Length: 169
Image 1 (cartoon, rainbow, N blue to C red):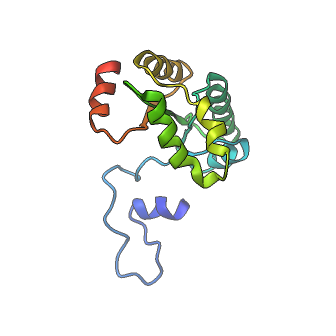
Image 2 (cartoon, rainbow, N blue to C red):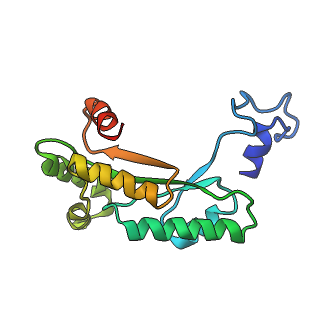
């Protein structure tokens, strides 16, 4: 990350290169770097180099999110970081008729790499299957300090983007 950040400000990071790494980023100093981290060691490690934390909660669970966000804030302070971490929450969702079946099918396919039975164990914990549940989850993450919420649809229907925009304003 140190090398990337130096390259993004135009420093020569490759010995004997004819010119600095290009193209330069649009943002001064380079893009914001968010670490996808769920466990204490990885969150503490990310505090040394990331600008923030991207969390993902299956349920979503307020206790999980709050614990990770609190740990990130604490880890950033322990690393002497002046700015607090950018905090991003996330979860899966399904909307409309057949939401449970849609979610179960998607998660079985997506989580299958974890091995036999894992998807069947985890799928029931994913609960965002209605408009109200989606609004509640987004509000809960905001109330816990999320700067942004990433909602991951379990459908390939592009109209879900409009549905979510209508639901959340």
